[in-house]
Image 1 (cartoon, rainbow, N blue to C red):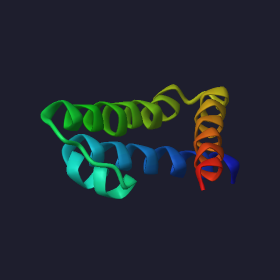
Image 2: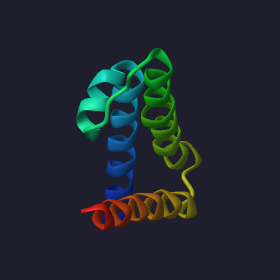
Image 3: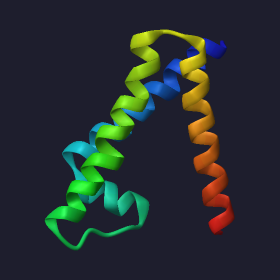
Length: 86
């Protein structure tokens, strides 16, 4: 069950990353941020695109439990950061 949940989370991360990579304006709207220039859209592609794709693919490709753990800690830290911003 735990592995299946980790794999599902990794796939969701890849899908979000592909959205950011292909549709940076949608990623901007999804996050509530805005890009004011081509460089800004490049940052959305890099951060919400490429980084998320790599973060999601790494555990799926490597298949090591510790990599799933790193991804889990990354998402947990992201959630804590967002809670602190509320």
